[in-house]
Picture 1 (cartoon, rainbow, N blue to C red):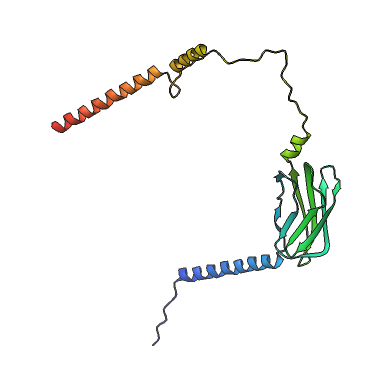
Picture 2: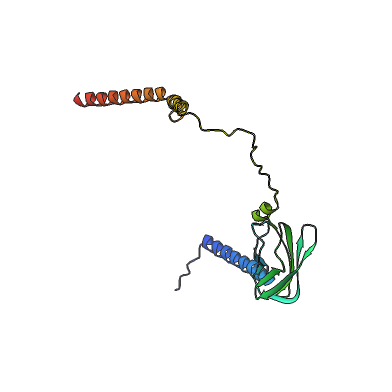
Length: 206
């Protein structure tokens, strides 16, 4: 006679729960993978960057290949004026090259491209050019020659300089405290250490 061993209800419930969780995960990841589109993953410069020199080129990198059909790339200054550029597409990279060096100011790269799956992608990259060399060249010279009639300041007498140095050495604090206070603290610390050693020796002799 064959004996049937019943399956515990707890194990059955756990198996059903795990199966339901796996089914939900497969459904979620399957739908999200089917609906995924290409997108911008990086740019040079990145949005918000402040550059010290005019960029030779601007590079946009996408997660998939980009089609040349339908691509629109515009570089605009802060006043909305368009800057002349050329561009080329190298699979996932879109390379934009200004026709002339960019002066100091704020700029926006407006990108409208079409990914390999036909999905349109629109991105705006804002950046600034703030070259210190250009600022230095445009700043007026403010240095003035010394007044010819004003007497030249000569070196201080040697005796006066030595006296001042001695006074400064006497009053100079050590580590932010007067020298006398520092020596007092060191003496007290030394006495304390001697007392501790004597107490320890006395305890050991008992």
